[in-house]
Image 1 (tube, rainbow over the protein chains, first blue to last red):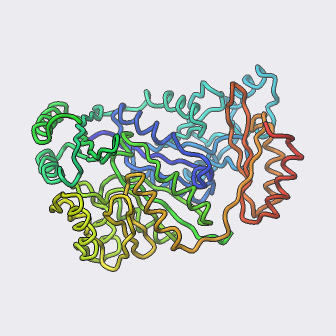
Image 2: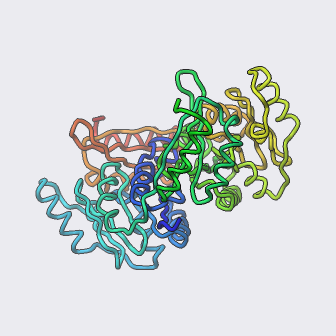
Image 3: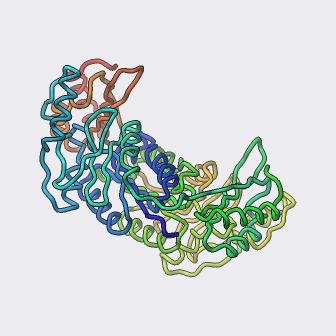
Length: 242
Length: 242
């Protein structure tokens, strides 16, 4: 498959301590799949600059796009923008267009644009702002890295701002068949079918439903004709849906 | 803090495509925190042997423990055990004790221990089995790597089998205060408090509740006396709970 590739970097101690359950990577995974971009890797790291820099450089070297979430708020533990600047070897400072966005927003809401809030206008040199229709403070894109907020509704709005600007590939299609048999029973025939269609990806996922054990058989690929043909053979092999 | 460290490696195309939402890393994060082991990093990779091997070697070199989930079932896309053997440079084959467990299980349930199911008895040389009270097919520990199933109830049972055997540290305690103010308003005082207690970790997490905006202020650490003192100052600074 020649679809563009991507990685996700989730930043924040609260994910690793178990306090917060990350939902952004699952949202991004679905959006990228619909857009024809293959998500290849997800990493989650703590609020430590060296760790963020190392992960970011490994991911942006290897994949076409990197999406980050978290660490761009106003508090002392929000260090993502500085870490990104460090990773790219560029300077970072309060930028006028970002400052103006925040100033207008806090004026409208009768709040003060204090030093802490002004930190959210710190943008690495050469970056383009990502629109934040929810709470104004922008994300930014630098090189192939898209830096977004951790708060889920803000993250989702920023993904919606960024994705239409990226070149996708043929949509990644999938079809599935659920059977009331264990994985061990269908494995041989399923493996043979996978070997027959090397350009498709075949996966099996056990489930339990009302006390019964079964397996979801999923075929993914970009060629609808191949997908249809493989699904026909799969259904012939393992019968009707559970 | 001198608590032992850990990383998690989630293996499976279905996570990256957005079909399945990973819940194992969040479960593990909470269990490790209670056990006094610090989860430092999470990675999620596809069912590709080279990617699994590279991630595994990076993580086991750096952290005290690595926990993996996924890819130890009977189908062709279950390649975790082979990847682990490759990472450690050891051989892998069907092992008699694992085979005996499966044979007894399938005999009881009147099913055949066919070639696909027998794959689940392939164990890298030198590994110790991890008990699976849910569905019998074992996980295994080799070196500092604990290899477990991806199905959540099986993963959880295996974590419960493994954790009591590992040396934990002082429990990681946390206390939090919710205030009906934005992060930008509390950032300055909160940062000063963080600087006063370098051994504690202070984090702030914005929330929306019934249309109101607020911030959860969380203090984490292993020393209950310090934690108590910092919480007292935090409450004095920002008042009562929202």
